[in-house]
Length: 397
Image (cartoon, rainbow, N blue to C red; front, side, top):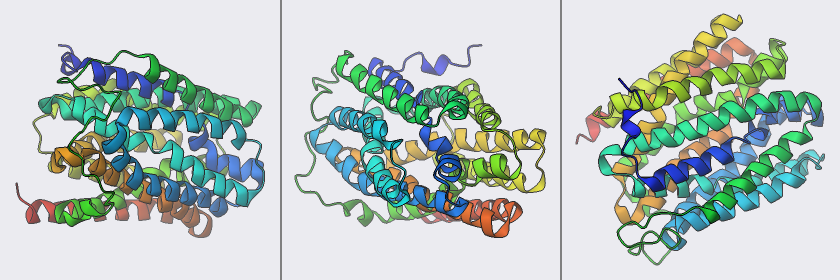
């Protein structure tokens, strides 16, 4: 039995978009080590290092509102290409900046440019996917992300021990390569529409950024997503500082531990979501949130490598179930002529969580200790579980 048989009929264009994502994510080295870089190289405290993610989150929050709507107007591919090129250029100069306050500003600009890629990519994937394969399509895209993430952070762990500047150069290179691929690749036409142009001709002419929030169910959904997303973002906030600074493991060990997460996703996520294709999205979202809360909460009861790995395995199962299901549910909630806009607001929940999640985690770690941090993660994750259950009862379909 082939566990990847669900990928057999995935459209050509989806494969090409996933490959572009793979190229880009193979250079993901800066974000996973940014807190350590700020703490060790720039010389700021753990909480000040976490503040960088607030600025990154602000930039991501801003661009989530803009990029989705812009994708509906000028086409997702253009937004994706411009984002990749701009990201590469900015990262080439990032490592030369040593002033903390200037780093905060440049981080905000970097996020505005870099995070424009995500809502455009999600919108285009949902358009190009067959309706019965939406969840599998998002799983394939996450497979590409995590194959890349199994390469980038691991290599980054070794590069950081040579020179932290190498992280920025490698990250920039893969952004350029992904942009070049999107310019050169041959996309198939979908129902007579060229992907190189706008994918949606029925989009409204005005930029009404808050029209999505008139959809009360979508608004409730966005609010419910935020707590558990803040927990997930501890993998770049509290977790690296906990493992490297408190437990005294090396950066390369942290990279290898994160590879447990990515290798699991590579091997398991697609067949898992193919098997769960007929699950109601909202039930899957609840299960994913429960596993995330338990997995991160378990960091509070043991510092041994074996227990860290068990914790990572549990929240990774939560991640593999939660993210494809939540993206699929967003696609189902969205009107076709507002798909990019809805995906932009879906991405905005991650931007908001990125704004406060890592910073809040580093603040708790510095001021109250690791046990309070991880037990708080459990509690916050369960808030999302409660809200999703309320949503299932309030908005029955």
